[in-house]
Image (cartoon, rainbow, N blue to C red):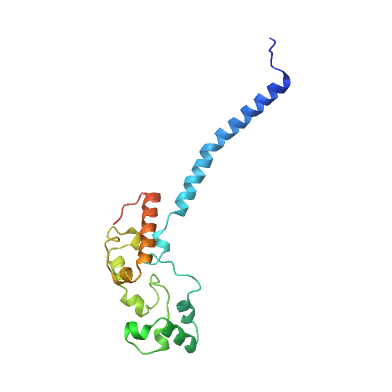
Length: 167
């Protein structure tokens, strides 16, 4: 059987068909990768402190934990602990192991943190799981409203990406 398609046109059509088939075979895999990437980007409550903050590795309070008394005094004064907590400088008070490190002692801010206490009472990994976050008026949120907005944004991303129900 003879056709009117020349060799060049035939090869062009076969190439287009081959690319089309290859693309169709890759689409489900690409969609799955995209879905996985989106899930990876979802905020993970376990990776944050109770309030939704992720303490940086270079935190000056954490550095002061193993620092000299002079370094601790600088951080103590910079963070205003005398005024906030009504205590005089004592190098033994200036340390931080983060608020989720259950095996270590807690510093003054962590001991007095109402957000941390609430999250622990409610058995939350982080406030991004809390359905009462938006109306919450704890001092942390009233003192740092921009931070609260960031945590609310993370909460929305968490719910959208994971489908989790707030507690």
